[in-house]
Image 1: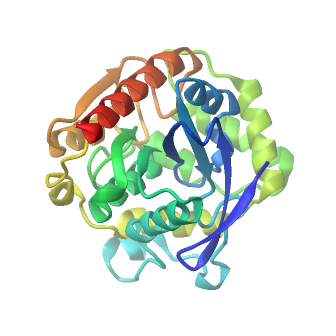
Image 2 (image 1 turned 45 degrees about the vertical axis):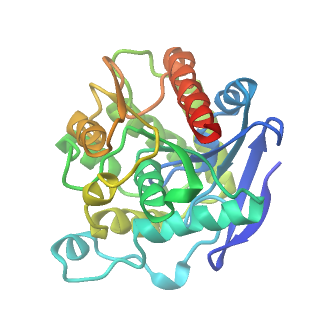
Length: 294
């Protein structure tokens, strides 16, 4: 069941899995994507490996605060520096830190996917004592590194849905472009989650504000180079939305980071890879806890 917490001046909706005595893990999702896309079963599998898992809606999606007063910036103007973004990735990292405060977590293991990986990176840079380990999945340290293919950006910037059926159809179109070509597209899962997401909250302007934050935020590589946190970078070799150079640059920037590249994986988490990815995260969190104890 979704709960709410006050954090960084906004309200954040979140859900938890597993025993509070487990290793704390914060899951951060990507652009225009609600926390439910961290599948229940994925979260349960991670919890079964000894973690206390929390997933949440970022600002401007789902049941968390939507900054409607900020409007919808023109992305071209933001990219060209002619207009300011309403907020930056660093502000979203501050939201995550505020949620940790509300949860009573002095520190935790952080796992971010896509834009969530950018937020996780910014959280580790801005709050190094609060991040026990960092897992960055299908992400990049800067908007210009590993940019999307023409097909991916066209799918992402297609006109917003006009009703629930249109939202489901549009989600299928997007994931058919950016999903994993080496694995079957789980169309039933996409239909189900897209419908739930539409029922929870649909806000195209909020997604635009998040996209503006990505475009306007500075290169995180100088900050990543100063990290001493155990880190794992996961990327799909066939990712069209954030291409492989984004993951390679992230791993290269973080001292000692481990890189896992999966052929056939695109910009999603195919079910057949869940066990492998969860095992890699578990090894990282266990090693980080051993390091902390020492």
